[in-house]
Image 1 (cartoon, rainbow, N blue to C red):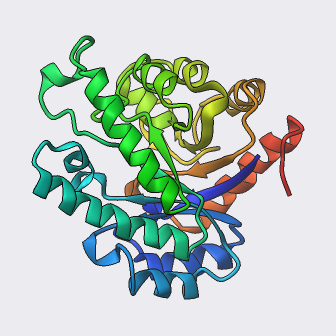
Image 2 (image 1 turned 45 degrees about the vertical axis):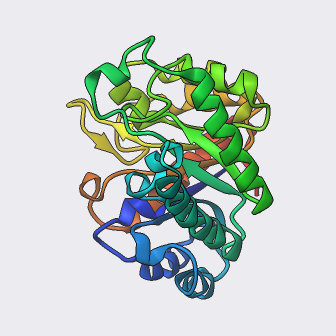
Length: 270
């Protein structure tokens, strides 16, 4: 396993072209690039980021999902085609940055009824995801579905249905979103199992506020052991909100904290 930082943690502090050299200078080795708007999808912005990333290893790209991802499942051919046009640009960015993974949310469960058990049209979802997986595969990128309280994978049980029908589907474990969903993260680890490609990690303090790993009371030893038990060997990416920490130096300190946990458990990849 290795550690890294999502540039989402620098949202509104630094633009991506500034965030990448900053993280490299801090000594971070691995990143996820959070593409923040349409102007950052595809070329020529992808070339700028390629130039700015230096020696960083880009694990994955992540976009502002609500801008187009829900429309990838739209029944209207023109709407869907436009959404796929934006997806292709995101995949171009992934290619330019040599990122193997794409962090995907999918639909937006805006209405309360859409979040309830029994609300999913799984045959239609599987059809849509099969098309998406094929499209990403052609572009050399692996689509990875993240557990997100307000989106497609909003509760345990969703991933297993999709994965049973779609052998190539991979998952992203998000600790923060597991907390928000009121389902223990362990349930998501068990469900995704060996299909977890990487994880978004954060901590939580005694008052229930999100903070950087090492600043709260979350049991990262237990997390690493559970991930190790399911054969996970990917990246633990620090992903917090911009107001959840002080100085940017704390991002590297958080990676150092996680590296110590990995080393202690015999799973630190150099």
